[in-house]
Image 1 (spheres, rainbow, N blue to C red):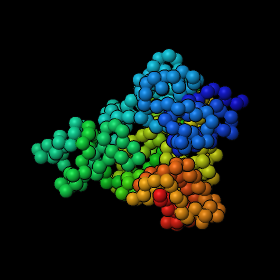
Image 2: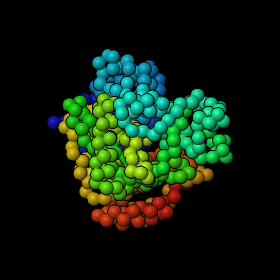
Image 3: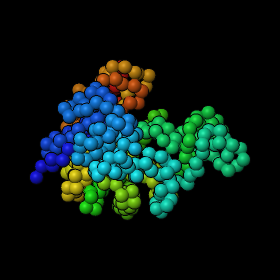
Image 4: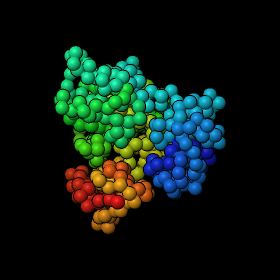
Length: 380
């Protein structure tokens, strides 16, 4: 039976676009709200409503017209969501969980309270307080500084290894964590519906661009033991239950050189670490999210083959109307799937799209993906 509930999405970026694409085959009435109809989701979804998802009144007015409200970005107006919930509206993720997730300090305290492993941390008001802690010996190098709020896509993170790096300190309220001796960074996307059914996608291995601190390449499945794969899934399931989240939760994990696993951070929505599921899985993360928030039975994810995904990022030193180079070579390659997000303007390291490579041989998929990274250039 078709899902006829009106679903409102706060945000019309690339995630709103891909949610719209997932909703279309089932004729799900999906509405997007954002500031401009030039945003990626608005360009393909006729049910676009102009508004500011950071504004209380706009969120309230939009949400009241919907049966279900969900998000594609965390920086939405919390008071608006709380008001909708108090009026009986279905809001996923719930405002309580989102409030914790938006603040990395609250996140760390939450993991501590729930017995979920995460790196050791301290809270600081500003950069001067961090310098003072170093001077009196209560904080040692190396460490990672993370802005408590508004950090995303590599922003709001600074790695401080020595005194020479202190100029990179962020002048904001921060979480300072021990620098983990990372062996692998793992992503697990997990879904949960209102009936309590939970399904997890296969853990993926993530490699990050060292300059932009953005996901550069994703490898599915992660090249870790079956025992570690299951341990990562178990942690992700425990985390979505602890937050009482309905919908998707993307859980980013560290595996250190000793083999210990800890939570880096989470995102309560479709996520970059799940884009490969569009072609590589019997259910995409976007379809699963829609199933979860409408309390439809979840599908147990199953992969067709190994997959590698690469983000298409704007070239350094280029800002302005976008130009793509190398796409023709990529588009003629079998089992290579290119997604351009429809953003008219590029800027350094902006996510402009992604490419997913499928191959029964994982190493061959990696080789093809590395070739594609060199072929495609995004400039102005």
